[in-house]
Image 1 (cartoon, rainbow, N blue to C red):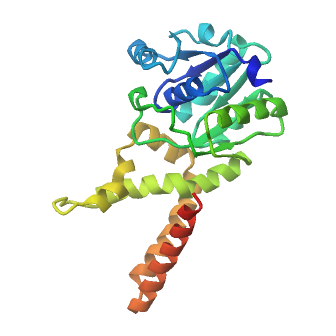
Image 2: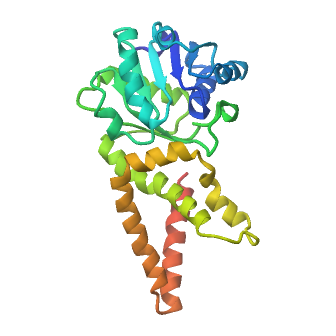
Length: 277
């Protein structure tokens, strides 16, 4: 599908991510479309329209997707697959559907249509409302797409182009299983550590900027994150086991030189990682 032929895009779930997609598309000069926001809460949809994240709003799924060439499903992970299945009969035959869920295998294995492209923009915030949405949220971000053997190459190419239009820096394609294994370490584990760190402390009288930065993501939505952790628990368990080994190296260090090596190795890796950004 040519980008210039896209006239209508629907976003189901206009929160932080969905709202930011709308704002990013509207800011872009690469596409001119009408954006329809679909949701279950009329006040939130009205706010999204007021903030110009969407042009039209509706509570009706059928009405919201019937004219769309592309649909972004931006819902909690347990609602994505059921919603995609529900809207397929209402969509045009060539409509491309994609999602933004932070785990992929439980979603893509339930959706058997060539025009679905699993996706995950690695960007966001501990905030969830559209009032925190930003047209620049995806600027410089990495987006992972998880096509299956059934995925239409044309659908995949279209979604890649749309993310590039939204200024994503890197578009990576990989199997859903690989995504879920890697993201367990780089996203899910950090959230778990933030939750555990907060819960392990009784006296917060000496907290400072380091503590604030380390635990910022503990303010994330507990319902959303409990579902993510549960759905990806096998990969997260492996990540926790590996992390525990690193903690034991620190706990069992017999000399300050051992601790210096551990700290220096971590510093070197992180410095190289963010120098590349």
